[in-house]
Image (cartoon, rainbow over all chains, first blue to last red; front, side, top):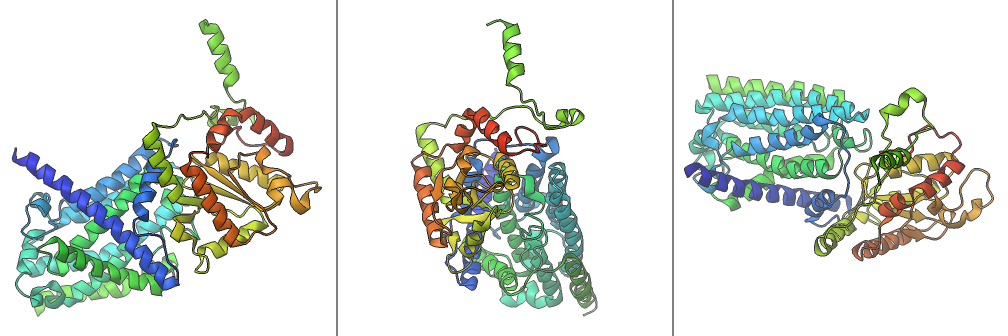
Length: 303
Length: 213
C-alpha cells in the first residue's frame, strides 16, 4: 500500500514537472522573441504543438530501434527526475530519492542521449548521425567539468545522497554551495550551458546547418514524446542544479523562482552569443571549465 | 468474392515502382496511400483547433516566392505569434508553401517532399504562377497549375504577394482547418491514380518509388 501511494505521488510530481518545464520553454521563447524585437509565440504554444503532433493521422517508422529511441529518451528524462528530491521535506515531491544517489542521476542524464542516438541512427537520414556525433562528443566534454563539480560537492558534504546535500545547505543563504564552494558552482554552471543546448552550444539541434539533427526523421507521436521529454528533462536538470548548488527548495514557489533564474543564465548567454563550431565548443569545455573544476576539488580538499 | 479474385485485385492495387531498377524495387514500399476517416466529431474538432494553432511550414524555397518567407520569420512580420513556425524537415511539418513557379525538376522534389509529410497536411500555393502559370504560362519547362499535381488548400494571388498577404493566407487556412474543410491528404489518396498520371506526364526522368514515404 505504501508503494502505491508513493507511485501516486510520483505521478503527480512528474505531471507538475512536465507542465512546469513546458511552460518554462514557452516563457523562454517569449524572452528570446523580445530580445529579437518580436512578440513571439504565446506561452502555451509548446502544449498546442504537442497536442498537434500527437494528433497526426499517420506516422512512419523505420524499425524497432526507431520506436525505442524516443522511449529511451523519455525514460532518461523520467529516470533523472524520479531520483531527485524536488522539494526538501515534502512527501509528495520527494519522488524515489531514497532509492538512488547522485551517480544514478548522472547516469540517467547520459542514458537518454545514448538511446536517442541508437533510435535516430536507424532513421537512415544522413543528418541524424551528424547530429548524434556532435551531441555525444559535446556531452562527453561537458560531462567532465560537471563530474568534477559533483566530485567536489561529494567530498565537501561527504555524501552522494542528494537529500543529505540539500539538508546540509539549509539554515542560511551562506550555507549554499554557491558560497561554500564557488569554483564547483562556476564549473557546473558552465557545463549547464552545454546541457541546455542554447547558443553558443546549440550544435545538436541546429536547424540552419544540419536540419534539426538527430530527430530529423522523427514524426508524429515519436516527436511528441521527444517534445514532452524536453519539458520534463529541463525541469529535472534545473531541479538537480538547484539541489546541489543553490540550497534546494522548501516549497513549490521557491523551486519555481530558483530554477527560473538558473535557467535564465543559459538564456542570457544564448541570446547574446552566436553558435560555436563543434571543435570550438569541445575545446572550450575541455579548457576553462575543466581547470575550474580541478581547482574546486583542490579548494575543497586543502582549504 | 473468392480468394483468387481478392489476391488478383491486391496484386493490381500494388504500386509497380517501374521507375526503379529491378533489384531496388524490393527496398521500397509498394503500398498506396489510404484515406483516413476522421475521429469522432468533438475530438476531431479539438484536434483541428490544435492543428490550426500550430502550423509548421516546410522551410523549402521552391521558387522565387520563397523570398517572402524570410521576412515572415524576422521581427517585422513575426509570424511566430500566430503559432506558425518553420521546420527544416518534411517529416515534422504540416504546411507546404509552393513558392511561385514550379519547374519540371522542382515538381519532382515537391511531390517527393509532399508525400513524405505526415498527414493531415496542407498546401498553400503562393503567387500567380501556381494558379495559371503567371508570366511563365507558355514556358517549356514550368507547369501551369500546381493543383494538377498535389491538392492545394489556399491560393494567394499576386506577383509577388507581400508577406501581409501570406499572413492573410495563413489565417484563411486556419479558418478552413477549424471548419474541417482541409482534407487534402484524403483527396490525394482517393485520386491517387489521377495525380500520378499527371505527375508522370511532366516528370520524364521518374527514378523514384511511385509513393515516397
